[in-house]
Image (cartoon, rainbow, N blue to C red; front, side):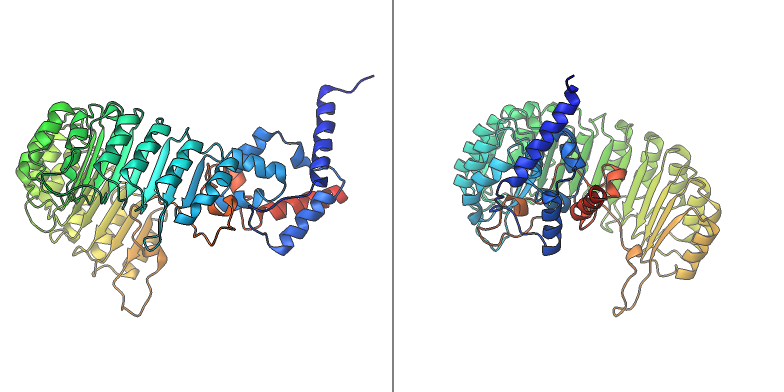
Length: 534
Protein backbone atom coordinates (compact mmCIF):
# COMPACT_ATOMS: atom_id res chain seq x y z
CA UNK A 1 0.00 0.00 0.00
CA UNK A 2 0.97 3.69 0.10
CA UNK A 3 3.92 5.33 1.78
CA UNK A 4 3.67 7.26 5.01
CA UNK A 5 3.35 11.06 4.79
CA UNK A 6 6.81 11.62 6.35
CA UNK A 7 8.47 9.24 3.89
CA UNK A 8 6.84 11.01 0.96
CA UNK A 9 7.99 14.40 2.27
CA UNK A 10 11.53 13.09 2.70
CA UNK A 11 11.59 11.77 -0.88
CA UNK A 12 10.23 15.08 -2.21
CA UNK A 13 12.86 17.04 -0.31
CA UNK A 14 15.67 14.86 -1.70
CA UNK A 15 14.25 15.22 -5.21
CA UNK A 16 14.17 18.98 -4.72
CA UNK A 17 17.79 18.97 -3.47
CA UNK A 18 18.84 16.90 -6.51
CA UNK A 19 17.19 19.38 -8.86
CA UNK A 20 18.84 22.27 -7.01
CA UNK A 21 22.26 20.64 -7.36
CA UNK A 22 21.77 20.18 -11.08
CA UNK A 23 21.01 23.87 -11.64
CA UNK A 24 23.84 26.27 -12.55
CA UNK A 25 24.99 28.30 -9.54
CA UNK A 26 25.21 32.07 -9.51
CA UNK A 27 27.76 33.59 -7.15
CA UNK A 28 27.85 37.15 -8.41
CA UNK A 29 27.19 38.51 -4.93
CA UNK A 30 29.21 35.97 -2.98
CA UNK A 31 32.85 36.17 -1.98
CA UNK A 32 35.07 33.34 -3.40
CA UNK A 33 35.95 30.56 -0.99
CA UNK A 34 39.31 28.97 -0.56
CA UNK A 35 40.08 26.43 -3.25
CA UNK A 36 40.24 23.46 -0.90
CA UNK A 37 36.85 24.19 0.67
CA UNK A 38 35.27 24.79 -2.73
CA UNK A 39 36.42 21.41 -4.07
CA UNK A 40 35.12 19.69 -0.94
CA UNK A 41 31.71 21.35 -1.32
CA UNK A 42 31.48 20.41 -5.00
CA UNK A 43 32.25 16.76 -4.21
CA UNK A 44 29.58 16.68 -1.51
CA UNK A 45 27.00 18.32 -3.78
CA UNK A 46 27.56 15.92 -6.69
CA UNK A 47 27.57 12.80 -4.53
CA UNK A 48 24.32 10.91 -4.94
CA UNK A 49 24.35 9.65 -1.35
CA UNK A 50 21.97 10.87 1.32
CA UNK A 51 22.62 14.36 2.75
CA UNK A 52 21.22 14.46 6.27
CA UNK A 53 21.53 18.24 6.65
CA UNK A 54 19.26 18.74 3.63
CA UNK A 55 16.57 16.81 5.50
CA UNK A 56 16.46 19.48 8.22
CA UNK A 57 13.44 21.83 8.06
CA UNK A 58 14.21 25.42 7.11
CA UNK A 59 13.28 26.61 10.61
CA UNK A 60 15.86 24.31 12.25
CA UNK A 61 18.56 25.38 9.82
CA UNK A 62 17.75 29.03 10.54
CA UNK A 63 18.12 28.42 14.30
CA UNK A 64 21.55 26.88 13.71
CA UNK A 65 22.63 29.85 11.59
CA UNK A 66 21.54 32.27 14.30
CA UNK A 67 23.87 30.55 16.76
CA UNK A 68 26.98 30.90 14.60
CA UNK A 69 29.59 33.62 14.38
CA UNK A 70 29.42 36.09 11.46
CA UNK A 71 32.34 34.37 9.71
CA UNK A 72 30.70 30.95 9.93
CA UNK A 73 27.41 32.36 8.68
CA UNK A 74 29.18 33.68 5.60
CA UNK A 75 30.71 30.28 4.93
CA UNK A 76 27.35 28.59 5.37
CA UNK A 77 25.77 30.89 2.81
CA UNK A 78 28.18 29.52 0.19
CA UNK A 79 27.10 25.89 0.48
CA UNK A 80 24.04 25.95 -1.79
CA UNK A 81 21.15 28.12 -2.93
CA UNK A 82 18.91 26.89 -0.13
CA UNK A 83 21.45 27.80 2.56
CA UNK A 84 22.05 31.18 0.91
CA UNK A 85 18.31 31.89 0.99
CA UNK A 86 17.72 30.72 4.56
CA UNK A 87 20.81 32.49 5.92
CA UNK A 88 19.68 35.76 4.37
CA UNK A 89 16.10 35.47 5.56
CA UNK A 90 17.14 34.57 9.11
CA UNK A 91 19.60 37.45 9.54
CA UNK A 92 18.08 40.23 11.62
CA UNK A 93 21.25 42.15 12.45
CA UNK A 94 23.35 43.75 9.69
CA UNK A 95 26.40 45.99 9.74
CA UNK A 96 27.46 47.89 6.60
CA UNK A 97 30.31 50.12 5.59
CA UNK A 98 28.38 53.29 4.77
CA UNK A 99 30.62 54.77 2.09
CA UNK A 100 29.06 56.48 -0.90
CA UNK A 101 29.65 53.49 -3.20
CA UNK A 102 27.23 51.44 -1.11
CA UNK A 103 24.23 52.97 -2.92
CA UNK A 104 24.16 50.76 -6.08
CA UNK A 105 24.39 47.64 -3.88
CA UNK A 106 21.46 48.53 -1.62
CA UNK A 107 18.72 46.81 -3.72
CA UNK A 108 20.63 43.52 -3.95
CA UNK A 109 21.70 43.58 -0.29
CA UNK A 110 18.22 44.12 1.08
CA UNK A 111 16.62 41.76 -1.40
CA UNK A 112 18.65 39.01 0.21
CA UNK A 113 18.56 40.30 3.81
CA UNK A 114 14.86 41.16 3.80
CA UNK A 115 14.22 40.54 7.51
CA UNK A 116 16.74 42.98 8.99
CA UNK A 117 15.54 44.79 12.11
CA UNK A 118 18.89 46.02 13.50
CA UNK A 119 21.14 48.00 11.19
CA UNK A 120 24.51 49.70 11.72
CA UNK A 121 25.90 52.17 9.16
CA UNK A 122 29.42 53.44 9.71
CA UNK A 123 31.73 55.36 7.43
CA UNK A 124 35.44 55.92 7.72
CA UNK A 125 36.19 59.50 8.67
CA UNK A 126 38.42 59.94 5.63
CA UNK A 127 35.78 58.68 3.17
CA UNK A 128 32.62 60.10 1.68
CA UNK A 129 29.58 58.68 3.43
CA UNK A 130 26.19 57.70 2.08
CA UNK A 131 23.74 60.52 1.49
CA UNK A 132 20.03 61.07 1.86
CA UNK A 133 19.14 59.03 -1.23
CA UNK A 134 20.85 55.91 0.13
CA UNK A 135 19.21 56.26 3.53
CA UNK A 136 15.79 56.62 1.92
CA UNK A 137 16.39 53.51 -0.22
CA UNK A 138 17.30 51.57 2.91
CA UNK A 139 14.27 52.81 4.81
CA UNK A 140 11.95 51.77 1.97
CA UNK A 141 13.26 48.19 2.18
CA UNK A 142 13.56 47.99 5.99
CA UNK A 143 10.24 49.29 7.21
CA UNK A 144 10.40 46.89 10.18
CA UNK A 145 13.65 48.41 11.42
CA UNK A 146 13.78 48.70 15.21
CA UNK A 147 17.44 49.70 15.78
CA UNK A 148 19.66 52.04 13.80
CA UNK A 149 23.25 53.07 14.46
CA UNK A 150 24.83 55.87 12.41
CA UNK A 151 28.53 56.65 12.65
CA UNK A 152 30.33 59.43 10.76
CA UNK A 153 27.58 59.69 8.12
CA UNK A 154 28.43 63.31 7.43
CA UNK A 155 26.45 63.60 4.18
CA UNK A 156 23.08 62.89 5.78
CA UNK A 157 20.91 65.99 6.12
CA UNK A 158 17.73 66.90 7.95
CA UNK A 159 15.70 66.06 4.83
CA UNK A 160 17.11 62.53 4.70
CA UNK A 161 16.33 61.93 8.37
CA UNK A 162 12.78 63.16 7.85
CA UNK A 163 12.19 60.74 4.97
CA UNK A 164 13.74 57.91 6.95
CA UNK A 165 11.62 58.60 10.04
CA UNK A 166 8.41 58.56 8.00
CA UNK A 167 9.26 55.12 6.57
CA UNK A 168 10.54 53.53 9.81
CA UNK A 169 8.05 54.63 12.43
CA UNK A 170 8.60 51.47 14.48
CA UNK A 171 12.16 52.48 15.43
CA UNK A 172 12.92 51.69 19.08
CA UNK A 173 16.59 52.58 19.35
CA UNK A 174 18.62 55.29 17.60
CA UNK A 175 22.33 55.89 18.08
CA UNK A 176 24.11 58.53 16.02
CA UNK A 177 27.62 59.91 16.29
CA UNK A 178 29.65 62.42 14.28
CA UNK A 179 26.77 63.06 11.87
CA UNK A 180 26.06 66.40 10.19
CA UNK A 181 22.28 66.71 10.42
CA UNK A 182 20.89 68.98 13.10
CA UNK A 183 17.89 69.77 15.26
CA UNK A 184 15.36 69.49 12.42
CA UNK A 185 16.52 65.97 11.58
CA UNK A 186 16.43 64.92 15.23
CA UNK A 187 12.99 66.44 15.70
CA UNK A 188 11.79 64.56 12.61
CA UNK A 189 12.66 61.29 14.33
CA UNK A 190 11.03 62.35 17.59
CA UNK A 191 7.87 63.47 15.78
CA UNK A 192 7.40 60.23 13.82
CA UNK A 193 8.89 57.35 15.85
CA UNK A 194 6.43 57.02 18.71
CA UNK A 195 7.96 53.67 19.85
CA UNK A 196 11.46 55.13 20.42
CA UNK A 197 12.81 53.90 23.76
CA UNK A 198 16.57 54.60 23.58
CA UNK A 199 18.34 57.63 22.14
CA UNK A 200 22.11 58.11 22.05
CA UNK A 201 23.63 61.21 20.45
CA UNK A 202 27.33 62.00 20.18
CA UNK A 203 28.93 64.96 18.43
CA UNK A 204 25.90 65.98 16.39
CA UNK A 205 27.56 68.63 14.28
CA UNK A 206 24.44 70.23 12.89
CA UNK A 207 23.27 71.62 16.23
CA UNK A 208 23.76 75.37 16.46
CA UNK A 209 25.76 76.57 19.42
CA UNK A 210 24.49 79.34 21.68
CA UNK A 211 21.09 80.90 22.29
CA UNK A 212 20.02 80.52 18.66
CA UNK A 213 19.97 76.70 18.98
CA UNK A 214 16.65 75.17 17.99
CA UNK A 215 14.99 73.23 20.85
CA UNK A 216 14.83 69.46 20.39
CA UNK A 217 11.74 67.55 21.44
CA UNK A 218 9.66 66.45 23.04
CA UNK A 219 7.67 65.00 20.09
CA UNK A 220 5.53 61.87 20.22
CA UNK A 221 8.60 59.77 21.11
CA UNK A 222 8.88 61.38 24.55
CA UNK A 223 6.11 59.18 25.92
CA UNK A 224 8.09 55.97 25.24
CA UNK A 225 11.68 57.15 25.85
CA UNK A 226 13.40 55.34 28.71
CA UNK A 227 17.09 56.07 28.04
CA UNK A 228 18.77 59.26 26.84
CA UNK A 229 22.55 59.47 26.40
CA UNK A 230 24.19 62.71 25.25
CA UNK A 231 27.94 62.92 24.56
CA UNK A 232 30.23 65.77 23.55
CA UNK A 233 27.59 68.26 22.49
CA UNK A 234 28.41 71.94 22.34
CA UNK A 235 24.88 72.80 23.36
CA UNK A 236 23.42 69.71 24.96
CA UNK A 237 20.84 71.81 26.77
CA UNK A 238 18.87 72.17 23.55
CA UNK A 239 17.71 68.61 24.39
CA UNK A 240 16.12 70.04 27.53
CA UNK A 241 12.53 69.96 26.18
CA UNK A 242 12.98 66.29 25.26
CA UNK A 243 14.37 65.32 28.67
CA UNK A 244 11.71 67.27 30.56
CA UNK A 245 8.94 65.81 28.37
CA UNK A 246 10.08 62.20 28.78
CA UNK A 247 7.96 61.35 31.81
CA UNK A 248 8.89 57.65 31.71
CA UNK A 249 12.64 58.28 31.50
CA UNK A 250 14.67 55.81 33.58
CA UNK A 251 18.27 56.52 32.57
CA UNK A 252 19.94 59.87 31.82
CA UNK A 253 23.62 59.99 30.82
CA UNK A 254 25.45 63.25 30.16
CA UNK A 255 29.08 63.22 28.98
CA UNK A 256 31.00 66.44 28.33
CA UNK A 257 27.97 68.50 27.35
CA UNK A 258 28.45 72.24 27.81
CA UNK A 259 25.94 74.47 29.59
CA UNK A 260 24.76 75.18 33.12
CA UNK A 261 22.91 72.02 34.16
CA UNK A 262 22.11 73.37 37.61
CA UNK A 263 19.35 75.42 35.99
CA UNK A 264 17.92 72.48 34.09
CA UNK A 265 17.93 69.71 36.70
CA UNK A 266 15.18 71.24 38.90
CA UNK A 267 12.91 71.43 35.84
CA UNK A 268 13.78 67.86 34.83
CA UNK A 269 13.16 66.35 38.26
CA UNK A 270 9.89 68.24 38.63
CA UNK A 271 8.48 66.43 35.58
CA UNK A 272 10.53 63.21 35.59
CA UNK A 273 10.57 61.72 39.06
CA UNK A 274 11.06 58.05 38.21
CA UNK A 275 14.69 58.07 37.06
CA UNK A 276 16.71 55.07 38.20
CA UNK A 277 20.13 55.95 36.73
CA UNK A 278 21.96 59.27 36.33
CA UNK A 279 25.45 59.50 34.90
CA UNK A 280 27.24 62.86 34.80
CA UNK A 281 30.76 63.26 33.44
CA UNK A 282 32.59 66.55 32.99
CA UNK A 283 29.50 68.70 32.95
CA UNK A 284 28.81 71.95 34.78
CA UNK A 285 26.85 70.80 37.81
CA UNK A 286 27.20 71.60 41.49
CA UNK A 287 25.45 70.84 44.79
CA UNK A 288 22.46 72.77 43.46
CA UNK A 289 21.95 70.15 40.78
CA UNK A 290 22.56 67.32 43.25
CA UNK A 291 19.96 68.79 45.60
CA UNK A 292 17.45 68.62 42.74
CA UNK A 293 18.50 65.07 41.86
CA UNK A 294 17.91 64.04 45.47
CA UNK A 295 14.17 64.27 44.76
CA UNK A 296 14.49 61.18 42.53
CA UNK A 297 13.58 58.79 45.31
CA UNK A 298 13.85 55.76 42.98
CA UNK A 299 17.47 56.48 42.07
CA UNK A 300 19.62 53.33 42.16
CA UNK A 301 22.71 54.24 40.11
CA UNK A 302 24.68 57.50 40.34
CA UNK A 303 27.92 58.38 38.56
CA UNK A 304 29.71 61.62 39.45
CA UNK A 305 32.77 61.70 37.19
CA UNK A 306 35.05 64.74 37.24
CA UNK A 307 32.43 67.19 38.49
CA UNK A 308 34.66 69.26 40.84
CA UNK A 309 31.86 71.57 41.99
CA UNK A 310 30.05 68.66 43.68
CA UNK A 311 30.92 68.39 47.37
CA UNK A 312 30.13 66.33 50.46
CA UNK A 313 27.01 68.43 51.02
CA UNK A 314 25.53 67.57 47.62
CA UNK A 315 26.34 63.87 47.96
CA UNK A 316 24.84 63.89 51.46
CA UNK A 317 21.60 65.41 50.12
CA UNK A 318 21.33 62.65 47.52
CA UNK A 319 22.09 59.90 50.05
CA UNK A 320 19.53 61.20 52.54
CA UNK A 321 16.60 60.92 50.13
CA UNK A 322 17.76 58.26 47.65
CA UNK A 323 17.77 55.29 50.01
CA UNK A 324 17.56 52.74 47.17
CA UNK A 325 21.03 53.59 45.86
CA UNK A 326 22.83 50.38 44.71
CA UNK A 327 25.75 51.66 42.64
CA UNK A 328 27.82 54.75 43.32
CA UNK A 329 30.78 55.85 41.18
CA UNK A 330 32.73 58.96 42.15
CA UNK A 331 35.76 60.37 40.34
CA UNK A 332 36.80 63.24 42.61
CA UNK A 333 39.52 64.37 40.21
CA UNK A 334 41.82 64.95 43.20
CA UNK A 335 39.74 67.97 44.16
CA UNK A 336 39.24 66.66 47.73
CA UNK A 337 35.70 68.04 47.84
CA UNK A 338 34.15 64.62 48.43
CA UNK A 339 35.58 62.49 51.22
CA UNK A 340 34.69 60.88 54.53
CA UNK A 341 31.76 63.17 55.28
CA UNK A 342 29.91 62.36 52.05
CA UNK A 343 30.72 58.65 52.24
CA UNK A 344 29.49 58.45 55.82
CA UNK A 345 26.20 60.00 54.70
CA UNK A 346 25.93 57.29 52.05
CA UNK A 347 26.70 54.58 54.62
CA UNK A 348 24.03 55.87 57.01
CA UNK A 349 21.21 56.16 54.46
CA UNK A 350 21.91 53.61 51.67
CA UNK A 351 21.91 50.09 53.16
CA UNK A 352 21.36 48.51 49.71
CA UNK A 353 24.71 49.68 48.33
CA UNK A 354 26.29 46.88 46.30
CA UNK A 355 28.95 48.64 44.22
CA UNK A 356 31.23 51.51 45.19
CA UNK A 357 33.92 52.96 42.90
CA UNK A 358 36.12 55.74 44.28
CA UNK A 359 38.67 57.42 41.99
CA UNK A 360 40.74 60.35 43.21
CA UNK A 361 38.87 60.23 46.54
CA UNK A 362 40.64 59.81 49.89
CA UNK A 363 38.54 57.72 52.28
CA UNK A 364 39.86 56.80 55.72
CA UNK A 365 39.08 54.06 58.22
CA UNK A 366 36.28 56.25 59.56
CA UNK A 367 34.16 56.12 56.40
CA UNK A 368 35.27 52.60 55.47
CA UNK A 369 34.10 51.32 58.85
CA UNK A 370 30.69 52.93 58.39
CA UNK A 371 30.34 51.47 54.92
CA UNK A 372 31.35 47.99 56.11
CA UNK A 373 28.97 48.11 59.08
CA UNK A 374 25.91 49.66 57.42
CA UNK A 375 26.13 48.23 53.89
CA UNK A 376 26.06 44.45 54.35
CA UNK A 377 25.45 43.87 50.62
CA UNK A 378 28.61 45.65 49.41
CA UNK A 379 30.01 43.17 46.86
CA UNK A 380 32.17 45.28 44.53
CA UNK A 381 34.69 47.88 45.69
CA UNK A 382 37.23 49.85 43.64
CA UNK A 383 39.78 52.22 45.16
CA UNK A 384 41.85 54.10 42.58
CA UNK A 385 44.30 56.95 43.05
CA UNK A 386 43.59 57.21 46.78
CA UNK A 387 46.51 58.55 48.82
CA UNK A 388 44.93 57.42 52.10
CA UNK A 389 44.35 53.76 51.18
CA UNK A 390 47.32 51.70 52.36
CA UNK A 391 47.96 48.35 53.99
CA UNK A 392 46.05 49.30 57.15
CA UNK A 393 42.94 50.20 55.17
CA UNK A 394 43.14 47.01 53.07
CA UNK A 395 43.52 44.98 56.27
CA UNK A 396 40.47 46.68 57.68
CA UNK A 397 38.47 45.92 54.52
CA UNK A 398 39.58 42.28 54.70
CA UNK A 399 38.20 41.97 58.22
CA UNK A 400 35.02 43.99 57.93
CA UNK A 401 33.69 43.61 54.36
CA UNK A 402 32.29 40.10 54.67
CA UNK A 403 30.12 40.20 51.52
CA UNK A 404 32.83 41.58 49.24
CA UNK A 405 33.33 39.54 46.04
CA UNK A 406 35.43 41.80 43.80
CA UNK A 407 38.12 44.25 44.87
CA UNK A 408 40.11 46.59 42.60
CA UNK A 409 43.07 48.59 43.90
CA UNK A 410 44.86 50.95 41.54
CA UNK A 411 47.65 53.44 42.15
CA UNK A 412 47.38 53.28 45.93
CA UNK A 413 50.19 53.00 48.55
CA UNK A 414 49.55 49.30 49.14
CA UNK A 415 52.24 46.64 49.56
CA UNK A 416 52.52 42.86 49.93
CA UNK A 417 51.36 43.20 53.53
CA UNK A 418 47.96 44.26 52.24
CA UNK A 419 47.87 41.15 50.05
CA UNK A 420 48.66 39.02 53.11
CA UNK A 421 45.66 40.51 54.91
CA UNK A 422 43.37 39.52 52.04
CA UNK A 423 44.50 35.91 52.35
CA UNK A 424 42.57 35.43 55.58
CA UNK A 425 39.76 37.96 55.09
CA UNK A 426 36.75 38.58 52.85
CA UNK A 427 35.50 34.96 52.76
CA UNK A 428 33.35 35.58 49.66
CA UNK A 429 36.10 37.26 47.64
CA UNK A 430 36.48 35.76 44.15
CA UNK A 431 38.62 38.33 42.30
CA UNK A 432 41.30 40.86 43.19
CA UNK A 433 42.80 43.27 40.67
CA UNK A 434 45.88 45.26 41.60
CA UNK A 435 47.35 47.82 39.21
CA UNK A 436 50.14 50.38 39.52
CA UNK A 437 50.66 49.75 43.23
CA UNK A 438 54.45 49.93 43.51
CA UNK A 439 54.60 48.10 46.83
CA UNK A 440 52.89 44.96 45.52
CA UNK A 441 55.27 42.47 43.92
CA UNK A 442 54.67 39.43 41.78
CA UNK A 443 55.84 37.28 44.69
CA UNK A 444 53.13 38.75 46.91
CA UNK A 445 50.47 38.11 44.30
CA UNK A 446 51.73 34.56 43.75
CA UNK A 447 51.61 33.91 47.48
CA UNK A 448 48.02 35.14 47.64
CA UNK A 449 47.05 32.85 44.74
CA UNK A 450 48.71 29.88 46.40
CA UNK A 451 47.09 30.59 49.74
CA UNK A 452 43.59 30.99 48.30
CA UNK A 453 43.50 28.70 45.29
CA UNK A 454 40.03 29.73 44.13
CA UNK A 455 40.83 33.46 44.20
CA UNK A 456 41.61 35.14 40.87
CA UNK A 457 44.42 37.66 41.29
CA UNK A 458 45.26 40.05 38.42
CA UNK A 459 48.45 42.03 38.95
CA UNK A 460 49.83 44.83 36.79
CA UNK A 461 53.19 45.89 38.17
CA UNK A 462 55.18 48.86 36.93
CA UNK A 463 57.66 47.50 34.37
CA UNK A 464 60.32 49.21 32.31
CA UNK A 465 59.11 50.76 29.09
CA UNK A 466 61.01 48.15 27.08
CA UNK A 467 59.18 45.25 28.70
CA UNK A 468 55.73 43.99 27.73
CA UNK A 469 52.97 43.65 30.25
CA UNK A 470 51.38 40.28 30.71
CA UNK A 471 48.00 40.20 29.01
CA UNK A 472 46.41 38.69 32.10
CA UNK A 473 47.33 41.77 34.08
CA UNK A 474 45.60 44.24 31.80
CA UNK A 475 42.85 46.41 33.06
CA UNK A 476 39.64 44.54 32.38
CA UNK A 477 37.28 47.43 32.78
CA UNK A 478 34.07 47.97 30.90
CA UNK A 479 34.43 47.96 27.14
CA UNK A 480 32.11 49.39 24.50
CA UNK A 481 30.17 46.62 22.66
CA UNK A 482 31.10 47.86 19.23
CA UNK A 483 30.38 46.30 15.88
CA UNK A 484 33.13 45.50 13.46
CA UNK A 485 32.72 47.17 10.09
CA UNK A 486 34.81 45.56 7.35
CA UNK A 487 36.03 47.82 4.53
CA UNK A 488 34.42 47.69 1.10
CA UNK A 489 36.75 47.09 -1.82
CA UNK A 490 34.87 48.16 -4.89
CA UNK A 491 31.41 47.30 -6.16
CA UNK A 492 32.13 43.60 -6.61
CA UNK A 493 31.83 42.95 -2.90
CA UNK A 494 28.43 41.47 -2.27
CA UNK A 495 25.99 41.25 0.57
CA UNK A 496 27.71 38.26 2.11
CA UNK A 497 30.99 40.09 2.59
CA UNK A 498 29.53 43.44 3.58
CA UNK A 499 27.50 42.01 6.42
CA UNK A 500 29.60 41.72 9.55
CA UNK A 501 27.13 40.97 12.31
CA UNK A 502 24.59 38.21 12.73
CA UNK A 503 21.42 37.68 14.68
CA UNK A 504 22.96 35.54 17.36
CA UNK A 505 26.27 35.02 19.09
CA UNK A 506 28.56 32.02 18.72
CA UNK A 507 28.36 31.49 22.47
CA UNK A 508 24.58 31.34 22.60
CA UNK A 509 24.63 27.56 22.79
CA UNK A 510 27.65 25.76 24.24
CA UNK A 511 27.06 22.71 22.11
CA UNK A 512 27.17 24.70 18.91
CA UNK A 513 30.15 26.60 20.23
CA UNK A 514 32.16 23.40 20.06
CA UNK A 515 31.61 23.31 16.31
CA UNK A 516 32.74 26.86 15.63
CA UNK A 517 36.02 27.46 13.86
CA UNK A 518 37.66 28.67 10.69
CA UNK A 519 36.49 25.73 8.56
CA UNK A 520 33.24 24.81 10.30
CA UNK A 521 31.27 24.24 7.10
CA UNK A 522 33.98 22.39 5.23
CA UNK A 523 34.77 20.07 8.15
CA UNK A 524 31.12 19.23 8.69
CA UNK A 525 30.58 18.42 5.04
CA UNK A 526 33.73 16.32 4.95
CA UNK A 527 32.38 14.15 7.76
CA UNK A 528 29.01 13.80 6.04
CA UNK A 529 30.65 12.92 2.74
CA UNK A 530 32.82 10.27 4.39
CA UNK A 531 29.88 8.68 6.20
CA UNK A 532 27.74 8.57 3.07
CA UNK A 533 30.50 6.90 1.04
CA UNK A 534 31.14 4.17 3.62
